[in-house]
Length: 71
Image (tube, rainbow, N blue to C red; front, side, top):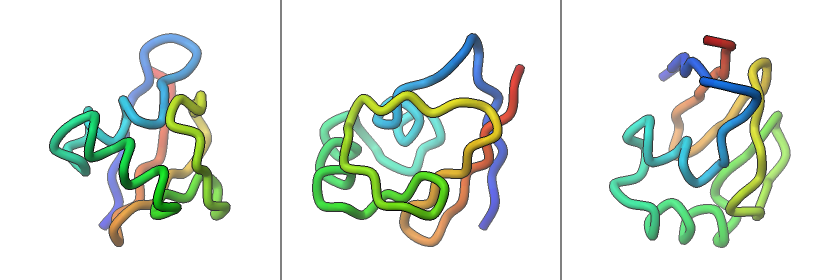
């Protein structure tokens, strides 16, 4: 399923994005998913919990896709 997320400002941290979109129930769950290599940013696995993702990027997790757009 595809989602669109409007980023306020220049970027959002990857862990915060997963929590804000409801893909992870908590920050801890987001950290665990990222650490386990379950999250892709622009089709590449990213294990940086606080990676800065920006409008125009695509995040994939658990069969869901989030497209980031500028607010």
